[in-house]
Image (cartoon, rainbow, N blue to C red; front, side, top):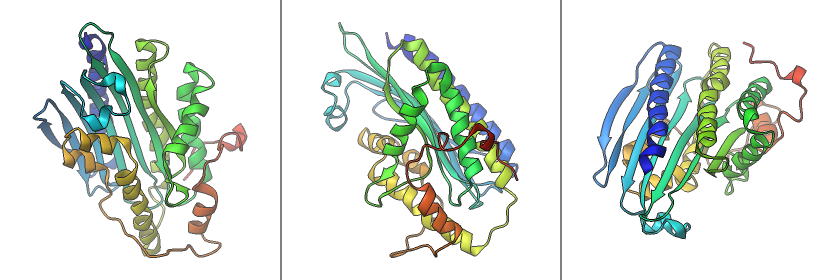
Length: 315
């Protein structure tokens, strides 16, 4: 029974990985993705693609995985008793881009599908995913463009969809031990199965397809800005927050490690260089201080600014 659900999702995800990688290679213009195809002894496998040392992207990855098994590990099913004793399939694409320039935000996204089955019972399935933006230097027009683009992608599915999943993203990417958000948010959703399979799949596709229109204009507008050691030092310091979140809170990382996933692929999201500075404080009246003051907290970005203020990124 799972094939009727699984195959259209898997087909889209494999195609999306191909198209996203091709677009990023063209945008960078200096390097290409290296692919590792891998198999999982317990069932499944994937295609890990990593790009390194590009002119635009210092490190980036776009991963496809499809893992399955006869039963979920107890640690994964403890919070969902209805999954106990069911076979499962989990399929998804995740991507992380760590640009070279500190003026271009790091960005992350993933889209995924999960289905669990038991003979004689209806399958349990849901979609999940999201995209988020982590700037190192404040640029309001970039943040407004990002949120406007993903809001418009959500609009066909209801006026309440963007505010609901935007708020969930703000909550999810909150580093409690730092009392700050990881970045300026985006969308986060999980357990999506309302409205029927076709509608849920269409929403997943809309979120995935919104990524390049949301991020690409920002990267193009900021790519030629000058930066030096000060900006690089701040970028690598802030990248440390990315590491902290992924290792402490990220559900995908934890599920992958608990379910026996491929460690190299799971930890692909880590930046190539990061630093930790004891008791760092930004200097007053600097762009670094502005980031902390105005950007690392949940905000209703679009509600606070008129449509006239929400023009696209300008170089």
